[in-house]
Every structure is written in structure tokens, then in C-alpha cells.
Length: 231
Image (cartoon, rainbow, N blue to C red; front, side, top):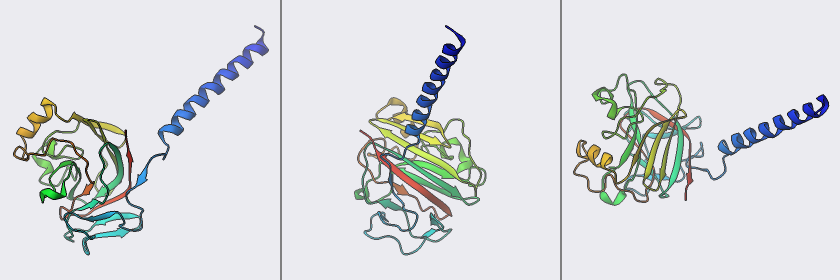
């Protein structure tokens, strides 16, 4: 092969390879299939746990954030829609010393907002986090600890996600998977038995669920809450 033909072949290979990488990057970063749970302006699609309307205090929309004010009251809020297999992602930040969480496998009929919780907390200051890893950011609260994390401090923005597909569940933090478990597994059963949820019949089971944002009395802010349904 002469030099001109070799150069043309190499150029073609570079173009094809770059195009493949670009296509994969576009697909992984695509917003296709994602539905906003919070539009950045209103509280449409949310209501108080166990009540038909949205709380009149505690929760506010501020500069594109859905924020719970410290000691503001209002209680937990949940989505009107239910989800079974899904990927949920959001951005969040806590005030120093704050505690909150995102819950799933929640049933309003049981009368209490008990379910699986992706813990969101100031790991360095809040007393609950100091109990141990199973109550720190990204944990399946009081049941399974997160793995190695890159956690930004209070006041700075973190990105989290939850994946539920079949019986498989994952917690992600700032682009890294930090925890995974299987509904119905021996591991989850043992974790439940050692937790505060051991007498809760529905904890550890899967069913269609709303998404719950917890009022723990502290300041926390959420934005870019998006979900996509999975087969």
C-alpha cells in the first residue's frame, strides 16, 4: 500500500472510531425517556404523605430548588405517580448538620412513611451518621452501608441516583455505584433482621411505589429530580 492509501485508511479508521465513541456518549447522556418530577418552578405532582394536598409550610421552591427549611415543618412529601422498575436521579445539598433522605417502596395505606431509604446526611456532624456507615450518605438506611464514595461537603451539590430493575437495586453517588442488593436475597434478609425494620412486614419487598422526600426537620434542597421507567 502506498503512503497516500495508508493515510486515507488511517483517517477513515479514526473517523469511524470517533463516531462510535461520540454516539455512545450521546446515548449515555441522552435525556430520552426521562420525565421531570420537579419542574424547578412549582410543586405539581407532589403531595403530603397521607394527605391530598401539598404542605402549606416547610417546603418552598427557591431559585430552582425544592427546599425544606430548617424546623419548617410540613412533613414528608411524595409523588402522585407510582413506579415499579425505574431509574431516579437528582441533585441535592444539605446544610451543615442536616439529615434527610429519599425513600422508595413506600405505601401510604400503611399509615407511616416506612420504606427503603437512600440516606442523605452530613456525615461529619449529624449524630445519626456518627452511629456508623449504615446510617451515612448513600446507605440503605440502617441496613446496608455504602462502599467507597466521593462525597461533597454540606453546602455543595451532590448527584445521586437509584436504580430498580426486577429485584436488583443500586445506589449511585456522584457517578459511582456505591451499593447494590437483591430483593429476596439472604443478604437483605440478614440486614433487615439486624436493623430497626425487622418487624416491618413489607420492608424488603418490592411493589409499585411513589418517591418520597423526607422532612427530618433540617434544611435540604433538591433539583433536577428526573425519573425514567424501565422494562
